[in-house]
Image (cartoon, rainbow, N blue to C red):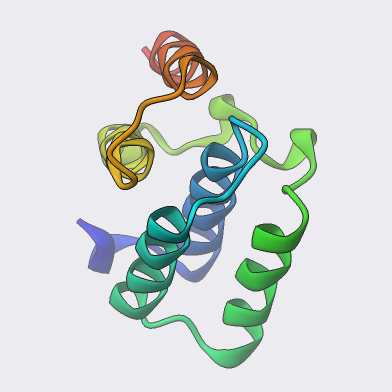
Length: 108
């Protein structure tokens, strides 16, 4: 559950979500709205919100979204959240689907 995440895990989740939003090289308004709702649900502080806005402007660095670093206890949550993000705009771009498939394989 989201409330079980530490501060670092919340930011890690947001890095993954933002990287998924960038998978098709475009962040659509519904994806952006999804991210903002998640920021609210996670109760991020102003500095954390600023970091997320930065990741919406420029994708997080590839080395900052290592699936091996997702805590085992939270892997399903990360996958489910990424899946929800790519469905948020009503379209699943092939690049988004491929990225999700890869994340699923790497977190087994």
